[in-house]
Amino acid sequence: MKTLSHWIGGKPVEGVSGNFGPVYNPATGAQEKQVAFASADEVDAAVGAAREAFRTWGTSSLAKRTSVLFKYRELLDAHREEIARLITAEHGKVHSDALGEVARGLEIVELACGIPEKLKGELSTQVSTRVDVSSIRQSLGVVAGITPFNFPAMVPMWMFPIAIACGNTFVLKPSEKVPSAAFKLAELAAEAGLPDGVLNVVNGDKVAVDAILEHPDIAAVSFVGSTPIARYIHTTGTANGKRVQALGGAKNHMLVLPDADLDLAADSAINAAYGSAGERCMAISVVVAVGETADPLIGKIKERADRLRIGPGDAPASEMGPLITKVHRDKVASYVSGAAAQGADVVIDGTGYTVEGYEDGHWIGVSLLDHVTPEMDAYRDEIFGPVLAVVRVETYDEAIALMNNSPWGNGTAIFTRDGGAARRFQMEVEAGMVGVNVPIPVPVGYHSFGGWKDSLFGDHHIYGNDGVHFYTRGKVVTTRWPDPSDGGINLGFPSNH
Image 1 (tube, rainbow, N blue to C red):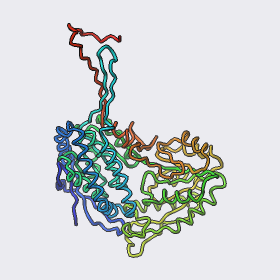
Image 2 (cartoon, rainbow, N blue to C red):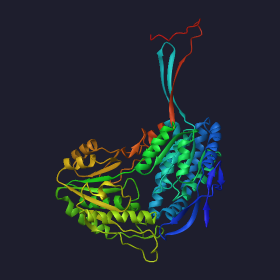
Image 3 (spheres, rainbow, N blue to C red):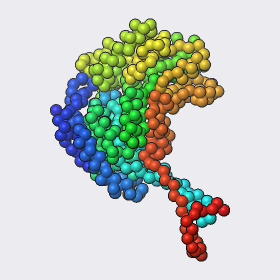
């Protein structure tokens, strides 16, 4: 069985802790690899390599950094098919979805290639007699990222390209369930000319996470994952003096008004609820149908859901793959039966789904629940699977109150032909990312990604301008160069004239 190791100081490093975790193929349910789990000492070795590399990388020119990143972008583009195959093999998502993930990660690499524009400072001249003031941004040092299983390539690329472009060095701890893509990203970075130690990858579990959060030489930590873990990362990291951005979970609502194009809304609901088997924090998990919209909309969603093709991610005909583990599959299924017991109507029950020839895979079909109420577990909890709940309301005001009462505030969407209603919604809804007739409003690379409330812990969203600010700190320099004709010494403050 293949064993996946760490990447430290520019090369593969075998794990020495003696602890390993299984890596499954979700389509077959079989363990195909194992991954070494890092000890605290191994995390320390990765931090040490990053600390040493920062001595030169932190003072390297922008031209040097961007030349490496441009080459890296070329290599990622050339290897996107290989990276997508690694994602499909360990996560289970269909190949086209995996390719899309790589493409969205590449957007951030391209943003990082333009880092000289983002790091331009500001200058005010003659603020006082012959006194100038400038603002600059400088790197932090060694920073770290802890990333989830659902986007093994994209989320790491949301972090380390910007971090290293800003002059930091990086320690990445990917999900132990899907380690291969991150390792490939590190290999390609080395091939692009990234100096040894600038990017390191350590695999592991909570031991590695805590070692990162407690390490005195790590200045900042980025995290994407569930809300309970995001809260833990933020609390523990800040208690250890670190800057932390921790993006948590979600329960994203899609509001459908009576004037909406219901075919567009139904297509969007299918894509947003069941794409990636619902294993994404930007999935739409609740449709809020206003007035008489619900019955015809549910009919259109059901008609489309019945045609979805579920199968192995590497099969060209598959539109949705399996879930990541059997345990998670069973948990998702429990919400469907639980909703029925709590009074919801199960329009589609996908919990008994299997794929011929792959009976041991982590399979579940799509489920559609109607007459869901806010008291039900299927509404209150983040399910992270292909389960779509429909909540019926009578008015827009009732809908917005329902949505804003959610503890999460990640993403949301409205479907309407009314520009005034859409504008009011985008101003009133309490969420960090809003779509108008767009079901999954993930921002492009030069805008930042992040939610409100329990979907974000920390002050900075990820990538975009917020990402640059998170991985740098500001400094203000006040300069006075006396005119050669001046003489004498003045130890006081300059006068404002």
